[in-house]
Image 1 (cartoon, one colour):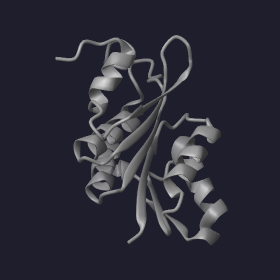
Image 2 (image 1 turned 120 degrees about the horizontal axis):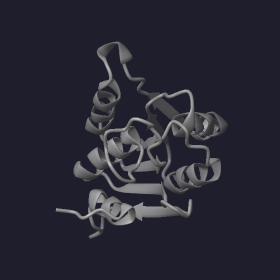
Image 3 (image 1 turned 60 degrees about the horizontal axis):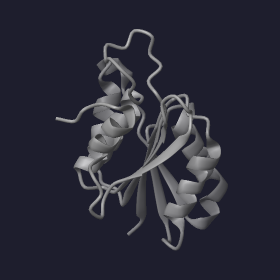
Image 4 (image 1 turned 180 degrees about the vertical axis):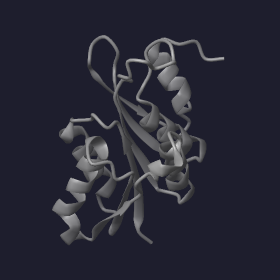
Length: 165
């Protein structure tokens, strides 16, 4: 069976090195690999697609899941849920800060789609490696779930300085 790796990330993600290194780590010694992503033409999905093309000679393929935006604004969330339901050995999340000028959510928080997909994967007990931009410093923080680690939501709440209920 192929090693399925779900990649989710912000549309404006530009850090090629972080995502490339995470994919290489997920690939290490695993045989054939399928990279599952949302087929966005920019950001983390575009980087994942580029990476697959560089290494397809090693048996790496991609599974693209574009959102059906004719279904409305929630199409991306529905697509994320569908990708998670299909299962994966791991989820790599590249989460930038929300930059929506009229976002109804108060306080610092991650980009909505990438955070949503990563939290769904965590809830489905798919191990998540999340790369998150730390508010204020711009520093990259790596969060991990599985093996007794706290759930992703709790780790994000701590990073963004929110009180978890």
